[in-house]
Length: 143
Image (cartoon, rainbow, N blue to C red; front, top):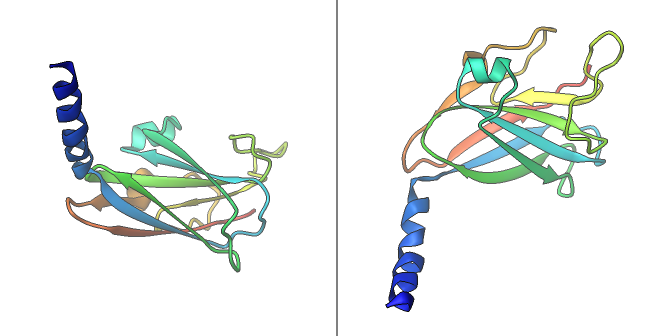
């Protein structure tokens, strides 16, 4: 009896992941192969403004070619926004100078910020539909 329950669980487990959709993220404008890429995935503006990501992912910067790198991951359908940190010193945190200006590269899903203020979630959010393979680009900015 115990083994049949385990077999049923193992055969139905893939059904739970069917809800997840593929996201292919292209990162452009990378200036260094040092460190790692840290992705923050947000559901709404309040969580973004508080810097409380729904999910965080880290990728090594081993596959950079001409300042560009691609990564892939799965997410549930819904409204999402992606922020990116080019974490050159692998601290897991954005480093700032004494004026509060970022010392490392950053970017947002399908949005390039040219100002100095933090964008609103609506500026870089996108909808991930069921059965969709979404392609998103993040252009990294260095100040």
